[in-house]
Length: 224
Image (cartoon, rainbow, N blue to C red; front, side, top):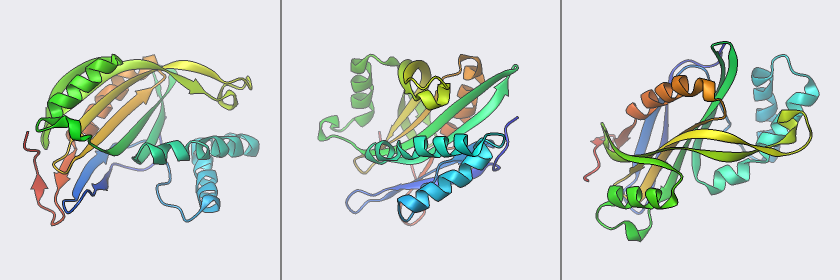
């Protein structure tokens, strides 16, 4: 069964020019949260080793160290992609062990989006052909969703074979352009087809909780 922290609010600040936008959302119970703040690589390693004891309570010390090393190796990619939050859940659905990840990313919007970034984002995602694209309306403004499947690299440490491989990963992305030339992207991904209905419903709640505020704490709604 899933165990970890209770429902909690999370936030990130999209700061471009003189118009920072605070993005806030609510995570449900059951998510392990990857460290977002650390002083140096040693501090990150210590935090990941501590987290490994929660993630792998019955695992050996060697397994925990391998898991921490594998996760630490992904941090450069997380930073490069602008990931502000990374969390994952492990649970059982109809007797099957399932897992899912949620990432929240902040990126600059390209100047080419013009006056209608929702339309431009929708067009760009359709051109990629990675999934089914639709426009959605949230409490804080209009967004674009993309639902699809991709092949994801998997370390041999996780499979036990020692050989890296790939596996299908189902995902939902929601792109919300912000009124300061940035975009917040929420993504839920899972390699567990059995858990898709559970995880997608859970993710819908996260997306619906999304709220925007200016630097004085006033709620914002995007103008498009």
